[in-house]
Image 1 (cartoon, helix red, strand yellow):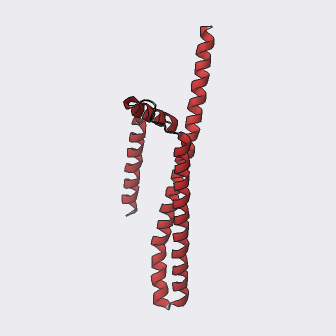
Image 2: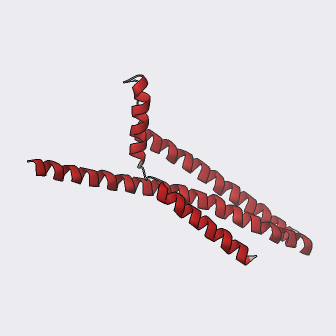
Image 3: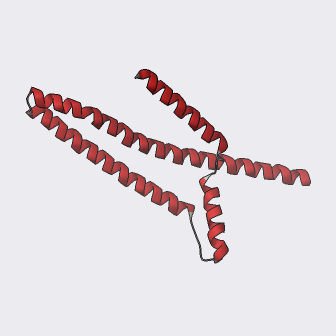
Length: 146
């Protein structure tokens, strides 16, 4: 069984590496600008997408979903704890069996939120790096022309 898990993990790592090598990294600002130029081509001047509004909406949605996940996890943990304290040996064994899916669910939910936050922060850092490097390249090009 462990050998199958190792093979599946190795295949997934290889697939991730293959897909990552063929993709282009885009900062959120570039994606928004491309969207604005596409939408603005049909009717110039009417489309106004602000990056701050999108970041605010994403942060608001993140906070709501994270809070809901925390509340649900605490409620389920409380129910399992009360069942464990009030039940006999058989009931306690059932509660212990239910803890494994609960812990896996918590790892998936909070890991997903961690990945979401990590992706947003990395996107901001990459965007800042791209803008800084493009601005410094423009400066050198301009200074070389003088």
